[in-house]
Length: 621
Ligand code: HEM
Image 1: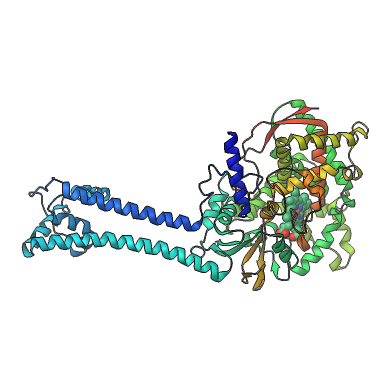
Image 2: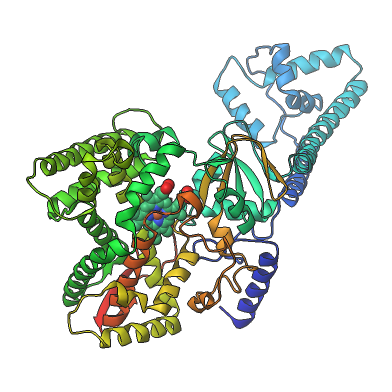
């Protein structure tokens, strides 16, 4: 791209930033190619009006021209049948044209119809001419032609005015609703709303956030839409996020669909009521505290070092996303249930993927559907977890892991322990909530560092200095990770830019106001973390990968990749530690080349991930 072009693009971007345009997923909106970049809702309608008028005018002139200039007279000997009055009403065009006594040659649709009439000997075009000539005998020819011309022009004028009226009233109606309802936006038809646009964005390589990005361009920072029959408001500000997070469970609650509850289980942290949530979360939290995770750090480091060594020895390109999905899954199953057998792990992973796919599907138990497969997979998983729990209760095995720490509470009072179904549902929840998110973040960290060599070299320097103080082959400890100050900033900047969870959904439990905007009971409010993380007022040059921006303390609720409040991510520490260990091994021991720079996102993925999975080749330093 030429320098002038780049400059122009930057200026356009600056204008859009000042209007509150959001760039999601670490990928800028391409101003050169995006057909919508300067298009707002109203101009779209005005343009539609103009196009329609021009088309109608063309049709009128075209038709008139052919009527007047046609020399093709109908064959008077063709067999005739007479049309009914209704046929005549449906074909005023034919009627008008025949008043001139000539065959119709336009518009194309009529030509097609004429062909079909001809193929049917009992229904030809000629009867119209016969009818007209009969009428002509009865009426004064000049008078009728005058009438017909008037009728033709009136029809065209009528259609034109109705079209323009409909479009103008649409603009007016939209404008009126903006003022009355408070939050701008387009709700579309009942139930359907903009669901199809959302699904189409989700099914494209721009990712589902593209849907949000476009609406923000059209309506402004705050907007509402209707998806799957529910009204959704996208909350774009740190202040809005604060208001929702600090009223979680009071004014807002996490809305979950039936398929989600069926897939992960009704005792899952994601689905339980307020009281149960507090108790389950308290009991689950301990194994995820920073101090309890030191064993996890060592085991993950060991697993990662061995796998990377093997890959570099092979010297082949490998898909980073696949690698990170597998290693996060294996390390989590090891930490939760001490599962290490390869074939068992792969079966469980397959079932967990099926459950995860079923979470946002239509809940109909029809064989072959995602929901059906997910429920079957869930049943298999529950059976497996039940077996493991029974073996432990019989004392056949008792490894030190998350599950064992839960079972140790068996003799505690009921509010101090989890029952079996609570343990099993939450084991599944933890695996599903932890695997895809952490794996995607790991992939993005490498992609961003690859595009920002300065940051990569600075991180490498820090990691080599930590590595230099350790024995050869010695595993990382929590203390080592605490020394990685630049590494932590790289992790933060990766999470800010990648927005692994694009927005956090809640449902309003009653009518309320957010930053002066009216929210009705039952509306879905989505805390738009992506918009907040790309807000130029909160982050200077938000498109720039710059870990050093975290030298400064962030404003409250401006950095929320793990959410906030009573529902903050339970695995926040685990995720950060996993990423730090990963970055340490990748930059401290290796260099890499990204083998496919394709920036497109994976289709139908709720978590933004590269379609290519980011294939890389490793080389030892
Ligand atoms: C980079 C990785 C991760 C990111 C970005 C992430 C992000 C989040 C966010 C934003 C939420 C809150 C959503 C909301 O408020 O609606 C959340 C919740 C949760 N996360 Fe994570 N997460 C990550 C990794 C993990 C890991 C590794 C685990 C567990 C092993 C985990 C387990 C959970 C659970 C159980 C919840 C539900 C908490 C509740 O409702 O009380 N996450 N995560």
